[in-house]
Length: 403
Ligand code: F6P
Image (tube, rainbow, N blue to C red):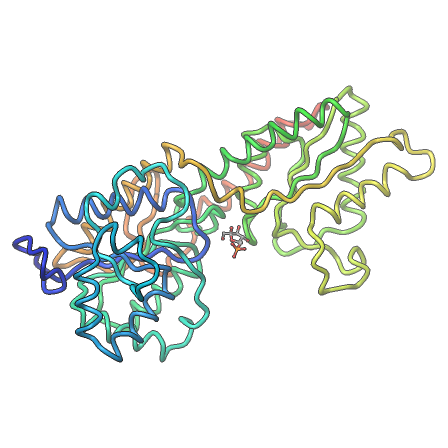
């Protein structure tokens, strides 16, 4: 692959652009990544950077457009570039050439200016085949896909089904991509959770309450674990290798809270990850129940504390679901730095003559390109145990023993 030799603003497609898309749930740091990849593309390689609006959905729509009128699609994309391509939603534009002004001032902004989406249609091989055909016709030399597990699964399919250079980049607040120590967005989401817990702590202390807060994280407990250590939340409940939480398990947790109050605690903050499941009995055998975990757990705690002879029958329990606020807000410096490091690795791999398809990963603090479908890092399992041990030793007010 040769870098574009000269800048020709009117014929960006002819200069074989690098395309970039953001898919799945947005993560803070995506804008920092877009800025970095745009600047690296333009400044280091003088190669056009083609932003895809709204993730895979944008690619599918662009493919449909190209099917009808390939030259029309090219002309529209060459005409409305940078900010103009981003702002005018009325024109049917799905691809935008990025320039310096279009990524100016966005480094710390949450969300993603190109838009992100979940696109179930992209799971169909025939839909991907159309997309591959169009990317080829447009002269795209590489596609960079930024997102979580579903988005990278789509990128892996493209990598297997085409001759395109495909580079994935982990970005998800869930931190459930176990081939990398860290994904873009995690650090900011943890900070946001610490901020939220601090607010709940103020009111919990004043009323001597138990606050049960539900965090995001899909099936992973990583976000809740990290937030518990950083915020001082007294209890953290995460998915336990698919084992559902039982009535008895919840009573044991409530009993540990009771012991904390006996020891003089003024309040208790409980974090429960959204991936936690309950045994069917807890849900009254309603397997389709949409009740949030925080509410189910709070009810179980209430039952425990109001049992006959209970010492804290008046204790108030308040549940809250923290939801999407965890995905927004100003990006942390750590996430901005990780985004820049991933972008640098991605652009080099995309432009290298003998580059490989794969995903950027943080391994031992260094950035590497690992193959799509790479196995979990061996230390991921250890890290999970370490964090839980740390939290136990930090949060207890009674001796827990030195494991
Ligand atoms: O994967 C990121 C994530 O925020 C998960 O933690 C959560 O389960 C999911 O996305 C929420 O998805 P949506 O934004 O589609 O509701």
